[in-house]
Length: 441
Image (cartoon, rainbow, N blue to C red; front, side, top):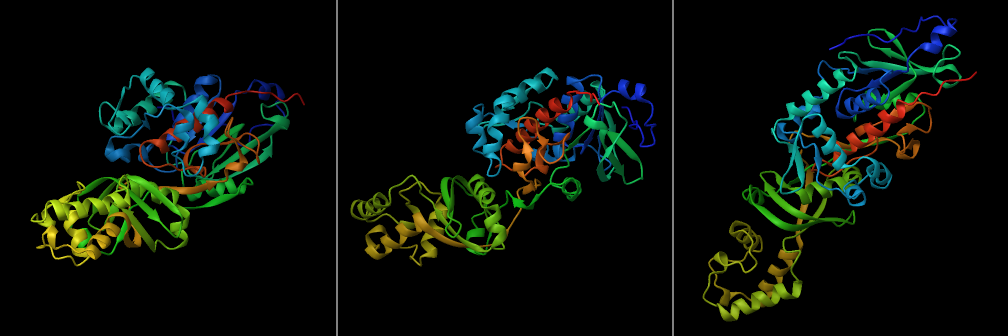
């Protein structure tokens, strides 16, 4: 693996002939999925370019290695760009065009050509057939090295400014980026890609070059519910369930998982993503409504219980749920209404049926905080999307500065969608950075 430096700032400005022959200098800041993918795309598109990737920490691709429980959920088997974009609470409109150019089918093919086969699971998530995230990390490392990308760890970028370089260089009007590292080294670049993820480092660099940052707040998290009786149901999954934030006027439907601190599962995670800013603003303390039977008509629920009372009067209410809910959940709902579990259906009053119907379609809870979703931490917020050209991922505020991945104000629901936006935006940025237009001045 090559460990080299770019030309230092002290390079002579008077050597015009040498400057004209200089190859395109590209710096990629951030050694995650987006950084590697962008660096590879640039180096492959322009083999003469000198592409250097700088990572602040001691290891590359840390998030790739831990994602998907160590299996790496590479993408999602959603091959319609318009439908794919609907999985992004922030960024859905901006990503429609990019997804028409590089979508999950392209991701699958990219890795296939690199010798990595992906498989699709029942819920649409796609993983390497090895079920090992190291497969993806190793692939990106090897492909970057083969493409000639210079890889450097422990190289934190602390400052970046535009400066006037030698006349005749690739950058228009001689403008280049002076990139300063923590060690005091200064590197010159004609193009820079910021792919630092949701980090303060990346945000500060983007701000220093004129960009607005949408404040980052957590997305994709579980709900803490202070209800010991509910906690006792940990492990139960119900599908589908509708969860709603009435004060935020938001709702989602899908599988729900009861955990020992509250509620999780795809329905809750989706709701947390779309409600990320609302939930942050209310300090993760707000009412939650749960419809345990979203496919059922409320009147039909009531009629079913009334029929059961007349047709099966001797059946014990606690052991006979007519709606297919897990027995423990059914008994929990009965107990929450103070309905005697020893009663038979013939002993259930109209008022109790009414209350039970209400609990089935509109159980009320109070969110008291947020949990985490496995080891994956996702935020919304980042570089304002209106300041980026999504045809090339180039900044509208600073020419030849590009963005890719989670540094942008883009986030998605769980299922491989966050990685797909990283692959797509990085590929577009890498291809665009590779273009060389020399100044004629």
